[in-house]
Length: 395
Image: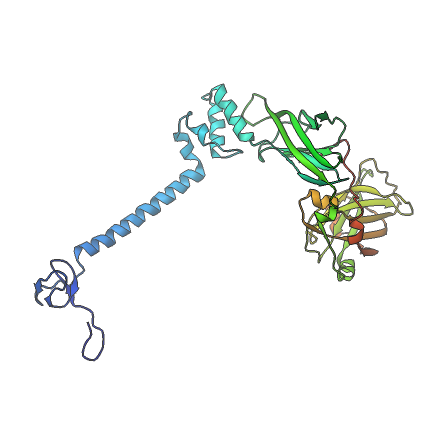
């Protein structure tokens, strides 16, 4: 309502019949004549009731949400479900349902069939992962992987057979990791090839005394192409790196207490890209480089490498170190580009380690003697040799 001076006035009250907000007079909603004496000045009961209901509903909702969250996070809700329903809610890996099923198994309330299903679901999925398109001349990896969080009861190789085009590959390299096992796919001829891995996955789960061996039979097709390697991963190089990286890259070298292994620390700043380097070493004054391993991290991190235990370490020997950018390693890591730069350190004298290799970070570090553009070299080389034998990288 607008007063004579143009100021908006609020209605004085509410219609006692329909609760329409109004001034004394005829109600524009229901037509009732309402005098000043009987106009309602307080909010109608229905309005107050709506406010009260909203407040009560909010309290109930917050209480329900808090209780539900507590029940979910504590896992208490799983104890209310029967054995027949609980396994249907189980998802792969360790979780609340899995923990409750293990508790019931320890109490002897699960049947052998129910326990079989629990173990199979926990370790699933068992998958075969490998590159489906491989440049000619490049070796690949076929990796069996299972659910992370379910560790095997052994660090030994899982009993499995590896085939390429129905031919068993019995003498290829193998890499054992916490939740996977990889086989080296030797360089194949151009065309389509069938990769197959089959065997059993031994599973040891705390709280279950029965050893399990989960069978698997997995296969994938890979295609070897004559496309050049750099069509898959792009070498990246900036001329400014020649100056900045020579000033920020550092290396230090140590000998462990047994004097049968060198330990290397490499630190590179101002290289904010994921790297794919092969680390090599040789006694100074010799020709042949020995591959120590790979360094595949962001450039701002300290990166560590180790020699093979059989590598002879003379006490007074100086060493050369070399980091070579490797396109084939970048491809295996799923990268689309990588820094194409090589580093070389000459005449590094190892430091005797008193406790552990971390002390190398605080020991004397040395800048590289050379930093070179390796973009053209990467297109013509594959410096990473295929692993041979069994490499155990378990924790």
